[in-house]
Length: 264
Image (tube, rainbow, N blue to C red; front, side, top):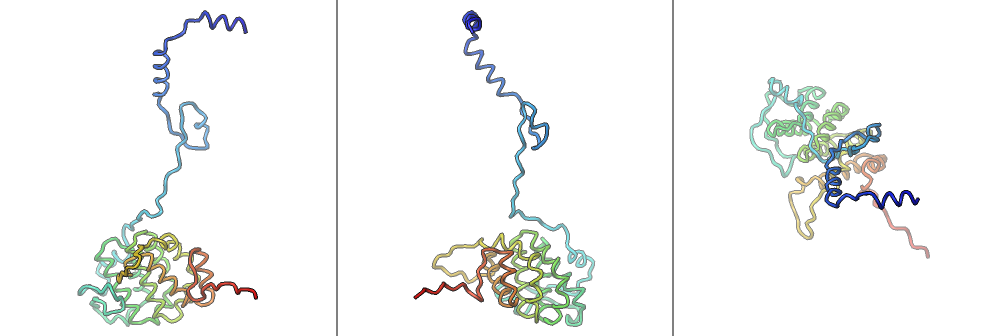
């Protein structure tokens, strides 16, 4: 200890300016970002790369839909003849058919029209939405045999994470459940493919306070709430438990939770 003390007493001390320069140069040493859980993370002058951030609401546009391919080829037997009514989707659709729609093969054409809901082009998507709704309204009894083929196109529309596309797909589902016989019960096994996105956008709504907004069909939170209520009402006894599994915050509107009786 004494020898070290004497050495410290006799050693020439560097001035403070030199120490500050050394610290400054040490702080300017380039640092490499390395992946986590590797041997490179143990090396000097390295920083572990943080995990990437995921935006769950980021839009994922579809490059090209089957409906767009058939439309460019001229295989779609309808064209737009005017503007549609956004207030009531059950009114007369502005679609001009080149043939009788009831005579079409629904197993072939209805999945193509539903696939067009995911198209990013507004005019193409508008034709697909109006065509799909018109086909459903003209022959609701033909929807049930085609229902398994409509799940993947609807799921593709939900995966785009575009609010306008999701609202259009939900309105098509509502129309199928309202008009098609037994469609609500047949959709219960497919809730896991369809209702995953509804859990993300269910609480995205506008607090109007005491105000009233008549254009309810443009708010995705209200459209999802209406769709879930309709699916529960028309889906039979197993609908609520399957909806609750995919959307935990949903409360039953058919069988509301009652308060426990007060013991006397």
